[in-house]
Structure formats: structure tokens, C-alpha cells
Image (cartoon, rainbow over all chains, first blue to last red; front, top):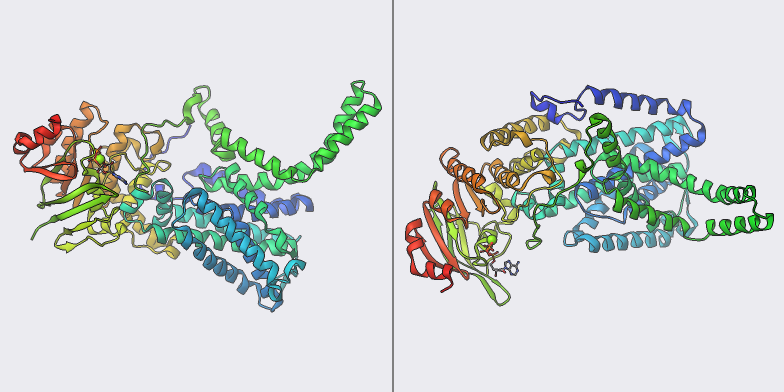
Length: 383
Length: 252
Ligand SMILES: Nc1ncnc2c1ncn2[C@@H]1O[C@H](COP(=O)(O)OP(=O)(O)OP(=O)(O)O)[C@@H](O)[C@H]1O
Ligand SMILES: [Mg+2]
């Protein structure tokens, strides 16, 4: 275990608290930079999706994790970013213009969503954001002159100052990595300055926040705007990665996936967004593989255990049928969320911290180290 | 010129008059205590002062300024800080972060500056930390600096709440039952701190308190309240000898 003896305020403020962090994050960054040359194109492509999901995860972390305002409408912000890219590109606007423009546009829309959200708490806010996402979905389907409606829209390869950056290139990978690192730094910078602390204050006690001089309305709107703007950036990258966008790509299920990113990763720190993104992006190919291979595997095990060939065949058919049932993915997602909320509310990152502490303290780790104690009854009177 | 004045203030919840035409004024540098049985309307008065509630009638004046219509988030900036009866700390943040929120009303940095963490922000952050450190020193909270509030014992939280209020460098501090839930020793410490807040930091104290020993020990003046109405006011001894006060407490 390492004990830090603080002798100046810079030590508090610094993002990388001590030399150990420099090492581990340095190595991580080096691995990420080398990855395109080490991995096959499939894994590189998966990593790009991890980055895009992680950018949205960071955005959602700012709004939901820090400020405590839940949103099931982030797919809509992603869509606005993506369509801004597609439309602007078709007008011949260069990437370096429409990339920031997408952030500004989604940021403004985010602020507009934030205003009515000021009076809503918890489940009502969730419903309002879902309604917003439906509106956006509907507009995308109907506003054919701009979005080509349900037919969808083709997005050409990204063109960075005359240099083409195709979706499978190393350059695209680095661009996504760069935006992710930028988003993470931005979130960490906010956290160590008054605005980020005001967000956290609003999450934990609006009453106290108000009395400490925090203008709740202003900060909630700021949080919505920042979160939406970052998601808009992810949307641009998403459009270029997919090369084709249509309204049905930005449904409620996608918003749920984003919420899962932070619930599974752990909603209390930026790390959680990364962990969650890795999990979500990797769980999909895993489920597909499971769906294809599990029935065959089970049948062959049954076979080797002396099951009759017909019975084994029937079993395989049955499992394959269950595997291809509609809505199975949603059900499994639901199950995963419930398990996390019940058994590991701090998410994968929380689990990681516990494992780390276990080894640091070995053999003195106490099981109750992370148990929370409720020492008083919180009054909700002043809401 | 009076420092802080409550002028005929009333607050109505439906048919219930929680505060009924209450007037008093606090002079600079005194410790003024409001006492009264449960449900007398003490916390409601605090909520009116910190503008969480709008009064049905009456006015509030602070340093000769009418603050009856000032929005709640601007009260801290004027120099009025408070604690809460049920403790309203930011549970999932460290003590340091909590105290730094106390300095929010002195924040000068803008959003863009903060996102990029420009040198100006770093300078301001250090200044905030220096001020916070003084309060940590003053209330002996060094041991909890980087601890999460959620894991701290009740007594410590109570002190941290006072610390957070002090971090805003107020002129007037409102303490809602600072000793409730504390044991005898902790109450003793609290009474010393309350006196130090007045004598060393020069902050005027307006508090609500049930513990009569503490009230007698620190208060210059006391106001007794029942069913939202003022029963008596004066020195602690005078108020406790007042027949209406005795009747209210004994339920006679
Ligand atoms: N938000 C509210 N809505 C309705 N009634 C309220 C509200 N807040 C307080 N009351 C009522 O107003 C009255 C005064 O409450 P208040 O909290 O001010 O009492 P108090 O003097 O602080 O009591 P205690 O000693 O128990 O803290 C009580 O009858 C209470 O039930
Ligand atoms: Mg009370």
C-alpha cells in the first residue's frame, strides 16, 4: 500500500496523483497507440467502437454520474451529431468545420432539453428524455429534404484537410482515440474545478447546493449542454464509421446501451465509462458467438453422454430457436443491468478497485471495507 | 443601522401557520439562539432566511438590504451561510470536495477556462484550497481530508457541515441544531467552536438549539417560539423564567 504525504496543493489538483499513475497510464497509452499494428482489422474496428461508446459514456457520466440527471435520450444527441456530419458533408463543408459545428448544435439542443428538465426529477426526467428522443427519431424520418427519411443517408469517407481517412484506417482509429482522450481530460478538468464540484453537489443535495450559492438551473443546463455536445462529436465519428445512417439506428435500445455503459462500468468515475464501453462493445459479438455455437456444443455434449442422435438433434434445434428469438438481446441486457444494480452498484470499476485493494492489503482485507453505513435519515422535505 | 432583521414574517403551509408574524433582529457579533418545542417553526424560519421558502408576508433585511426576494443561490454570496438539521452533505464526495463547494460563491473562473484548466483556474484552485485549509485547521478536521463523507461518523459530519458553511467566509452563520445527535464531549467541543466562530472569526451566529446547557453557555440572547409565534425574548435566564415558555415546555 502506498501512502501519499501531501506537501502542496498541486498534489491535490494534479490528475495523475503519483508516479505509479504515470507508469500505468503511460503503458496503457503506448499499447493503445501500438494496437493498430498489433491487432487484426476486426479487433481494431471493435476498438474504434469501444472509443465511440466510451466518448458517449464520458458524456453521460458528466450528466448522469456527476450531475445525477438521468437521460434515456442520448441516442438522439448521437443522431444529431451524425446527421450534421452527413448533411454538412453533402454540402461540401469540410470536416474541421462540421466537427465542432456538430458539437455546438447538439450542445444547443442539449441545453434546450435541459430547460424543461429543470423541474423534473428521477423517473419523470427519464420519461421526458425518452419523449425527446422519439421526437428526434420522428423528425429524422420525416425531414426528407435533409435526412432522406427512412431510406437513410450515405456518409462518405472522412476528409481531413484533403487527406482521406477511411473508416478502417489507422488514422481513423487515432482520431477516435484522440477525441476520447480529449473528452476524458475535459471531464477530469471539470471535476477539479468549481463547475464539476457544483455538478456533484447537485447530484447529492440540491438543497445544500442552493444554499452554497449554486444556481441549480444554470448548472443543470450547462451539464446537459456539455454532455450533449460531447455526444454530438461521437455522433460525427459514428457516422463516418458506419458510412450509412438511418433513423432506426438511433432508437431507445441504443440509449439503453449507453446507460448500460455507465451502470456496468460504474457511474462514479470516468474510468467507468471506459470499462463499460469495452463490456458493451464486446458483449455483442460474444452473444452472437454464443447463439451460433452453444446449441451445437450442447448437442455434441449430449451426444457424447450417450444421448440418442435424434434427441440431440432436437435439443440443438430447440436451443437454436431460443437463440434466434426476437428480443433476446434486450432481455439479456435487462438481466445484466439488474444483476449489476443488485450485486455491484459500483460497476466493473468498483469491482476492480476492490480487487486491487484486496491485493494491496493482503492478507488484511476486510469484507466490509466497502459496506456503506446509513447513519441518519435524509429528509426530502426541501426538494 | 441593524445587521440582520426579520420583520413580521409569516409562512403558511395550507391551513397551518408554521411561522406567524415573527420579528426579531440580530446585532453584529452576537450569538442569537432560537428555542422552542418540536414543530415550533424554527427550521422554517431558517428556510425562509436562506430563501428556500417564500414568506406569505413580512420582510427580511440583511445589512440594510431587503433580501426578501433575492434568489436562494445568491444568499451565500451576500454572506449568509447555514447548516441543516438533518445534515445535507454531499455524501459521495470527499470532505475536501464538500468544503470546496462551500467556496462556490467565491468562484471566479469561467466554464471554458475550467474545461481546459488554464493557469488562472489552477491559481484560483490553490487559493480556494488555502482558505479551506484554514477552516480544516480551525475545526481540527485534518484526519478526514480525503475521506468520503458516506463513511464518516455522525459527529464528524456535523462538524464538517459547520466547516463547509465557514468556507464561504460568511458574515452571518445559521446553525440548525448543531448539537443534535452529538454525545456530551462532542457537544462540549461544539460549544467552544461556536464561541470561537464569533470571537476569532468575527462571524455573527444565529442558531436553533434544544440543548439548554449549550444555549445557556454560548447565547447572548434567546428567542422562544411556539406554534410559529414568539413567546419571549431576552437573555437566556429571562426567557427561561418567562411563564409562557415554561408552560410551552411543560405542556401546561
Ligand atoms: N414543507 C413543509 N410542508 C408542510 N408542512 C411543513 C413543511 N415544513 C415544515 N412543516 C410544518 O411546519 C411546522 C414547523 O416545522 P419546523 O420544521 O419549522 O419545526 P422545528 O421548530 O424546526 O421543529 P424541530 O424541533 O422538530 O426541528 C411543523 O408543524 C411542520 O410539520
Ligand atoms: Mg427543525
